[in-house]
Image: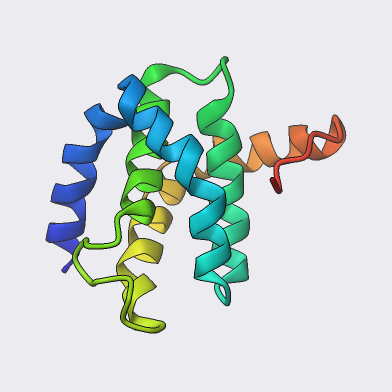
Length: 123
C-alpha cells in the first residue's frame, strides 16, 4: 500500500501547482474536513498544511509536496475508497503523515508562527 500511496502522491505533486489543482484544493478542503470527522489530530495537521499551501511565501517545491497530500486527501477514490467508513481514511492519513514528516520542522514552525501572529489556520 505504501508504494501505491507514494506513486499517487508523486503524480499529484505537479497537479497541485496548477491553477486547476489549487482550485480543487481551495474549493474542496473545508468540505472534505467536515466529512472526515473523527480524525481530529490529523485534521489539525491538514489545516496547518492547507494554510501553508495557501501562503504566498511557501516555495513551489514545498507547496507541491503539501499540495499533493491535500489532493490525495480530497480524492474519493484513491488506494482505499473514502466511502468505506473509518478504513477509507487510512491511506489519506498515511499520505498526509508522510509529507508532514518530510516537512515537520517547517510545518511545526509555521504553526507556531501562526499561533504567535494569531492567524486563524483552523478555517
